[in-house]
Length: 515
Image 1 (cartoon, one colour):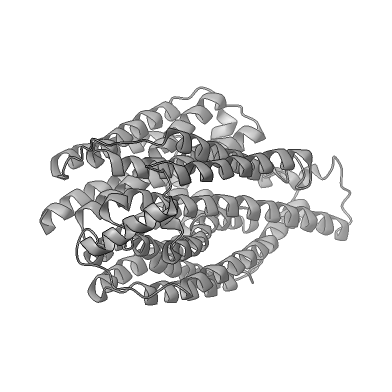
Image 2: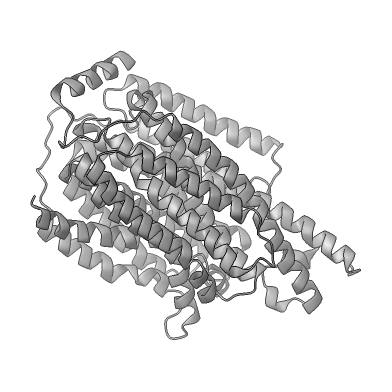
C-alpha cells in the first residue's frame, strides 16, 4: 500500500477505534441518570460498566490470536457489526438487566476493535515507520478515554438528546468506518491449511480473568478482603489461570504465546504498560469524580476541566511518534514519558478540596504527556521483537495485560477512595457536632444536591481530600513501570514488515524449546 492508501485506510481505523473506546467512558457521567430512568439498583449501576470491561479485557487476546489465523480485514468487519448492533441494542434497553447483557456484547466488539486496529496497522507498516502512525493511534485512544466523560456530560445535559444517545451516537460513525475500510483497506487474504484454534486455552483464560475481575469489583463492598468469598473467588480464578497456563504451554497454537512472554523485552514492556493503564483509567475515572463531587462542578464542566490531560496525550503521542520513526529508537521516549508521568502523579497526590484548578491542570498535563509518550511505544517495543505471523498474539497480550492492570487498579483505588471518604465524612460530622443516623447514610449518598448545606460541605471536602491519597498509590505504581522500562534493552526498530529470516528462525527455536 502506498502512503496515500495507508492514510485512507488509517482514517477508517482511527474512526472506528475512537468510537469503540469512547463507548467505554461516555456513560460514566450519565450513569446516574441512566440507572434512575431504568429504575436500577446500586449493584446494577456497577455492572453496567463492569460487564463491558469484563468482556473487552477477557476477549482481547482471543481476537489477537484469531487475527494471526484468519483474514484480518474480515475479522475487523465482523467486529464492527457486533459493536454497531450491540450499541443500538443498548440504546433501546428497557431495563437494567437488558442493558447489562447488551453492554457485555458491546464489550466483545470493543475488545476486538481495540486490538484488531493495532494488528492491521502492524500488517501494513514496518516498525520503524509505524512509530509515526502509532502516534496518531495513541492520541485517538487517549483522547477517547479522557474525552468520553466530556461528551457524555454534554449529552446528559442536553434535554432534546437524552441518555440513550450515549449509545446511539456510535451507529453513524461505525457505518461510515465500515464503508471506508471496505473501500480502502487492502490486505492479503491469509489461508492456512494447518489452522489450530486453542478453544480450551481461550475458554480458561476468559473464565479465570472474569472470576478475578468480578472479585475485584465486589471485594470491600459486598464482602471483606479476608473472607470465604475472597478465598473462593480469588483462589478459584488463580487456579483456573494456572490450568490455562499449563494448557498454553502444551498446545500448538496458543492464544497467549508463552514463549513471547518469557523473553525479557516483552515481559518488561508489559510490566511498564500496567502503570500506563493505571494512568489512563484512573485519571479519567477519579478526576472526573473529583471535579463533580469534591469541587461541585457539573458533568459538562468536569469534562472540560480534564482537557489539559487530553491535550498532553494528543500532543506528546503525535510528536513522539514522529521522533521515534525518525530515530528508530523507543526506549529514550518511554523513559522520559514515565518520568513525566511519575511527576504528574506525585503532583496530583498533593491535591485536596481547595487546591487551585490551574495547578491541578499542570499536574494533569504532565500525566497526559507521560501517557502519550509511553503507551503506544511500549506496544511497538513488543511488536518489534516478534515475526509478522505472531503480531496479533503479541499485541493482544500487551493490550490484555494493560487493560487488566488498569481494571484491577481502578477497582483497588476505588476501594481505597471509599474507605478514605467514609473516614473523612465521619470525622467531619463529629467535628461539626452533627449527629450521624442510619449508619451515616447521608455520607454514603452521591446525590450531593439533596444534602443539607453543612453536610454537603463536609462530604465535598472528604471526597476532595481523599482523591490525593489514591494518586499517591498511582505514583508508586508508576515507579515500578519506570524501573521496568529502565531495564529494557535498547533496540533499533526494523525497516521490514517481518523479522529477518535468521531472527525469525531463532524465534521459532525459542518457541519449540519453550514447548
